[in-house]
Length: 390
Ligand code: SAH
Ligand code: SF4
Image (cartoon, rainbow, N blue to C red; front, side, top):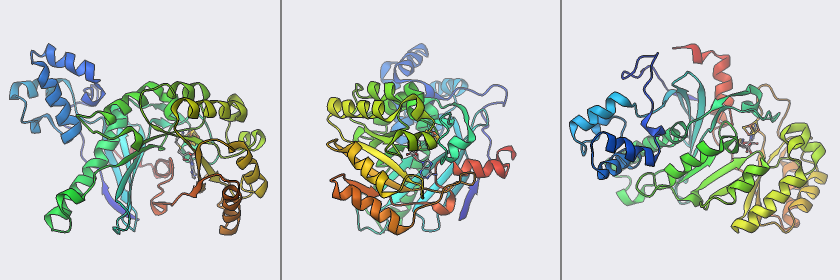
């Protein structure tokens, strides 16, 4: 594990008592209004939007397309980022970064950046795993975030800012590669994918999650295609139904983790509210309405949900549904009783699914040495009392 940096910089533009709101929390419509209230023509709003989300400006000063008095007026009213990196870690193999961010009220959240195709064998992919809540109320027993409880919802700007930060990391790496002549400008990629699989339940923060998606997907800004965005849910039935009617071609991942109510309720309290039959009904309707497959996440917990019988039940449950199963050997948490099944057990589980015609993959693990699993860095830092460091 490398401790890449430990943040010591505070924000100079605010006093601790009255933090300015982040401009990343101003929606596109509201930004148009703000700009017109400041006596500026409408195209200035588009320039501002582009500076924020396309160029990734970190200060109003660097928005040189905007007149100085206008920049000063914005500076008086807003800050740019609502998140500040507190701890930044890089895995030993250089593939994975994990950042612990401090929010304006002191809450802590985590974001992970995963680099695929470093060796040039596959098309390079740069995936950011983002948080949508500080903590989580759903209490899945194997999850470090769930073990910490719910703190609060993240705003759209706090969600988007995590991607903007990681894009800056990638951009500076790309610039270095180009400068040293190891890559050409058209060979490097920026953030290619965003997965809503960090801390929290995105569909329990529905409007802010959708607001952040609107910004990430915006053609004049971050321009990340909806097909490259994956929302992961614990299985909130009404919200899955709502999501099916959204205009975006998003990917949906459903955390199933067990094929029967008895096993699922043991590890996922939400199953008592939305048992498997209701969940699967919503999933089948989702596939029918959107004509898009669902990804089912299945954390393999040794001797808990990984027997051949579980695999057979899972295959029966998913039979005929357009889907893909991601098998994830559990990342053991400090407080949880779970361990990973050995290779033989996971291989058998997989084989049963494959023989039943259920497409599946075992998820490649990244960043184990930096506690890249959901909620684990925050859990550890709280133990280390990092959050009281400033
Ligand atoms: N709340 C959402 C998204 C965040 S969790 C959800 O539950 O889907 C993202 C994924 O990480 C989920 O599939 C979750 O079950 C899984 N996960 C949580 N703790 C884990 C652990 N210790 N090891 C492996 N995967 C874990
Ligand atoms: Fe919350 Fe997802 Fe963790 Fe469950 S797995 S506690 S829903 S973050």
